[in-house]
Image 1 (cartoon, rainbow, N blue to C red):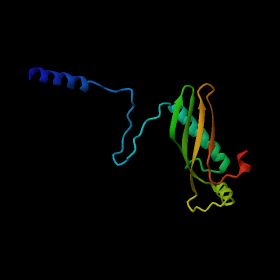
Image 2 (image 1 turned 90 degrees about the vertical axis):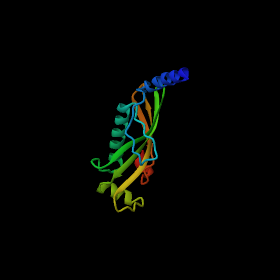
Image 3 (image 1 turned 30 degrees about the horizontal axis):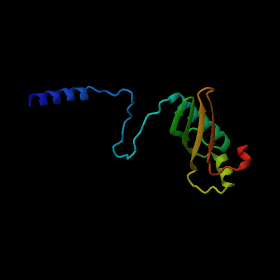
Image 4 (image 1 turned 135 degrees about the vertical axis):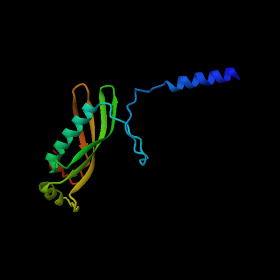
Length: 141
């Protein structure tokens, strides 16, 4: 009985001293069914989010002050990274006019869509495609 008690105490000490510092913990909302993980490379995330949003805003007529881009997924394999951004854009008058020509019917001037991107750690360059719903082929090239 003493051996059993001693081994239980010893095992509880080993388990209690295990601090996993490799995983950065993010605050978890108890009402959300999803697990959240922090982005390992925040420099790439910030660069890609900011620059893709600026380019898309210029191209399609978004209000940069109220629009935002959010990295939804990011996978790094070696020196190659790929992922997905979710863009929530508020159209300015120029953007509304261009979108109305393509059949835009939304009173709130809000558009939500996805961009898929690929990033090279060797060259620090990236390319992306977007599924903006009111794009015409003439504005893409």
